[in-house]
Image: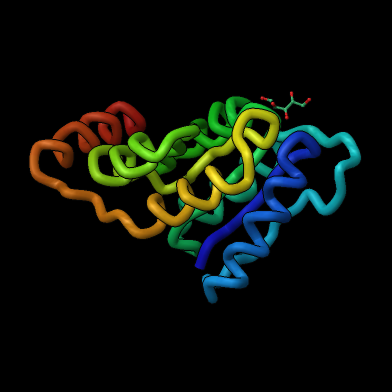
Length: 145
Ligand code: RB5
């Protein structure tokens, strides 16, 4: 189950992604926002990130204008590895190498079709472990410090 959220800058892209997830029978919960009215992105980013961090949701998708604001906020939540992605290579690599658990997208940066490809790759690529596990452990240790 995917937790999904956005601010006004990412609202249209979030709605398009929800349609894409529906068409592909992928379950999600929408944490808002629910219109293109101006809202502050940290609130929804913290909410989605906390849900993922508590393992209530397997992964999260956050959209804002650039994807940067939600990624900065989400990465403040312990256990979150939020990746801002705007290309297919990074979508694959950040799952394989970083085991990213939140995908951040910029609604004012990428088009819907590219976003769907990125979502598809990101959801269907597994973490490859090996030496990458050691690096994630280093981040986890720093977080606990
Ligand atoms: C909102 O105007 C915009 O700043 C926000 O969506 C996001 O791009 C922030 O990083």
